[in-house]
Amino acid sequence: MERLRFFSVFIIGFVIYFYFDAAFFSFLQKQVTVLTQSKAVGHIFAYAITLVPLVITIAILNKGYRNLTEKLGLSKSVSVGMIFAFLSTLPMLIAYAMKFSLNRELSIDTIIINTISSAFFEEIIYRSFLFGMLYRFTRLGFLPSVFLGSLLFGIAHLYQSTETSELIGIFSLTFLGSVIFAWIYVEWDFNLWTAIFLHCLMNLYWLIFDVDTNALGGTYANIFRFSTIFLAIFGTVIYKRKNRVPFEIIKNTWWLRKNTGNK
Image (cartoon, rainbow, N blue to C red; front, side):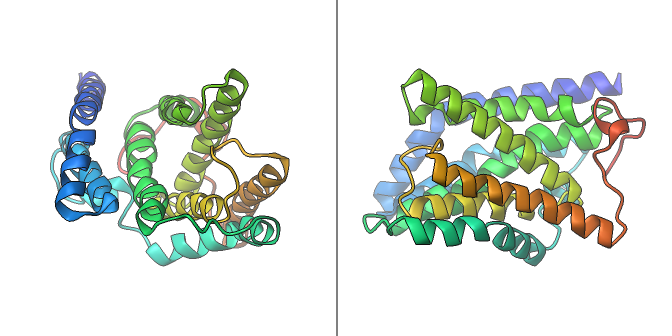
């Protein structure tokens, strides 16, 4: 009965969020943008308000608002997340600076919207809620827990093109990226800041160096994007082995887990 309640609340909460977001996000963004003369403020405000149903759902699932930041993965070290992300994204920063010119048409609003705001709120939605609530508080293992969020994350980026081949590439890259971000989130002891800053910096370098108009990119760009992902994974493995920290995602946690509860 408790499991049925959890999944019912989870599904209903997300459906309410989905329709609330569809109905009010654009309206709120436009109204606040006009009022403040800032697209960034409008974007952040719209995200913050439309995220309320998810926050309420998390509170219901965990029987109260106590330790809400911990449930969201935001109570862990910000500096750890920042350092991890900066070191991991050095291949992109160096390679793109050497190859591409700076995008001089960028505005502060665009940078904030496509890096800080998007990374922060998307990680809460796709990693903290859609993945984290399932993996941390049910018996579902990593693969079934990560599938829904990654599927929706991939679909959410399909607006960037209308070409079939590009759409397949964009979906595949963003789906895979979502899985990797979820793995990083878990292995860094559910510190969402690792995923937030990694997401933010990868978007930032892609944007400020005018790499491409969508998430697919060319061969050169992807070589160093995948180098960054490899470095993030390799660095996580080395850190955990050096400090003798057990891995969370192992054979016994791929599909179903024996233990559930507050992780």
